[in-house]
Image (cartoon, rainbow, N blue to C red; front, side):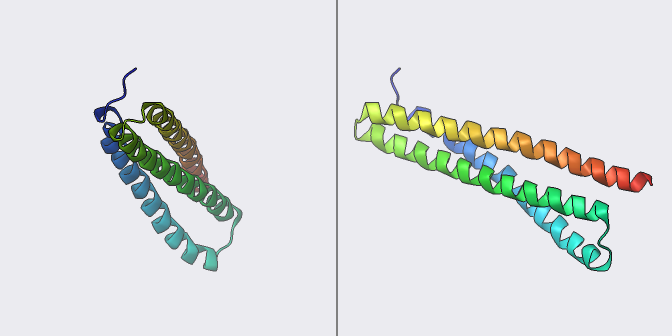
Length: 129
């Protein structure tokens, strides 16, 4: 396959939108943690501890999602440079690695969504009592 400048450039808007979504998730969790901090000071119950544990896991996953997306973005830019200087073999290798990092980021996103759903289940269970 002939790799042109436009192929890795296609990743730029996709990764940028992904990063916006990841940042929104991060900000939502940060706000939730700030709210729970006040509650935890007054009442350190088991459901609250479970929520905090889930939030810690989700925060770590989001950090890794963002890091892998950034690496993917950077490698796509490197790929474009390699295509520009006509190093086709290296451009193909780096572009493949960029795609792998993007896939890892998306898999982490899926895992984070699963944890988010689990955290909401804890919240609902607590409200049913």
